[in-house]
Length: 83
Image 1 (cartoon, rainbow, N blue to C red):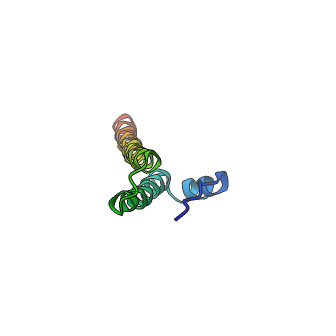
Image 2 (image 1 turned 90 degrees about the horizontal axis):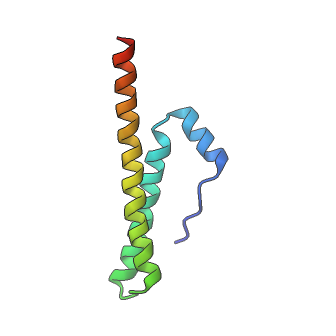
Image 3 (image 1 turned 135 degrees about the horizontal axis):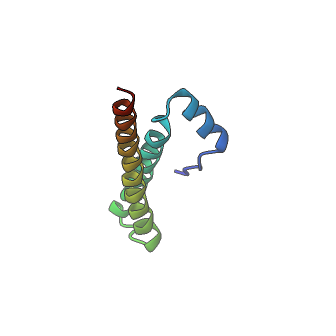
C-alpha cells in the first residue's frame, strides 16, 4: 500500500473546513502507515526500512496529537482572555 503525501491544496481545504482536520488527518495517515509497516514486520519482513517506517509513524502520530492538544490549550487561553 502506497501512502501519498498530502498536497497544499488538500491542507487548505481541510483547514478551511475545520482547523482540527489537519492534525486529525495526520494522525489517520500515521495510523495507516503504522498498520502497513506492522503488518510487514508481522509477516517476517523485518528490514530496517519497515522498522523505521513503524517508528516514524509512531512519532508522527504523537506529534499530531500534541498539535491538537496545543490547539485546545490555545483556544482555552483565548476564551479566558475574552471572558
